Length: 260
Image 1: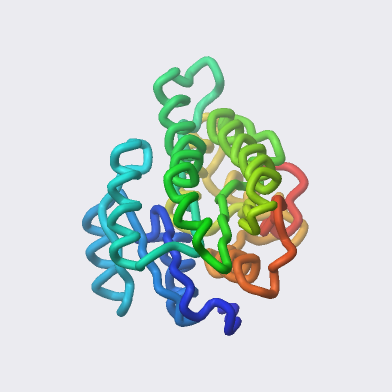
Image 2 (image 1 turned 45 degrees about the horizontal axis):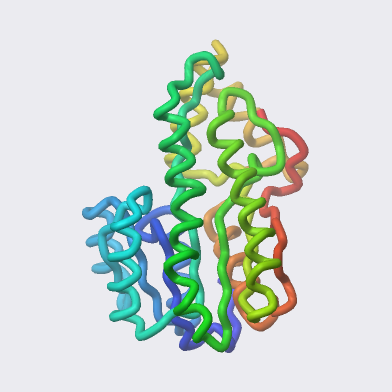
């Protein structure tokens, strides 16, 4: 995984960092000798992650809840002694359904986790970041944040919003030396995408193999990406090697031009 000496000693907070992409990002920072604190809504996954990763710190938190975010940031500050890097990784797939079958509460829940949580985490972490000598924010978006996606309108809309938030923050905070970028993964192989594929196959009346193939072939490289691909990009953009990267929507999607 990407390593750079400038990552050593950084105080890093990762939301939803107990599994999946978040945990792989945490592992990358730990390997680079950074100090890492994660939060997660899944208490069991959190306990397992802390047990399996020496040096990893964390707490249970629901980023859809404002008070929970504030408490999490307080605990992170006590554990890390400050903050240099905020990785807004938390996100949910939202409903897989055609527009007339999506309930309003499902849309609102998707935005609460995927967008509002990022806004609130930055809002309440900004004073800590202002005290850092190497401050950086990375917001997790998606290839769906630049492309439409059938039966995934709530998710796609939320990920487009992340890019708007990111670019606005980059302008607002850049004068203080605080960088803000978005990372846009394509189809990341793993349990979540497999569940989405299964749900879409049922909705579209297609076979599981056909829908899986469409996900694999939507990128020019004709394959899904891995969590390590995403983590390497995050580590690079946070490091000194990426010190002039700001306000960017960085696609890690094998060159995806359309989503199935």
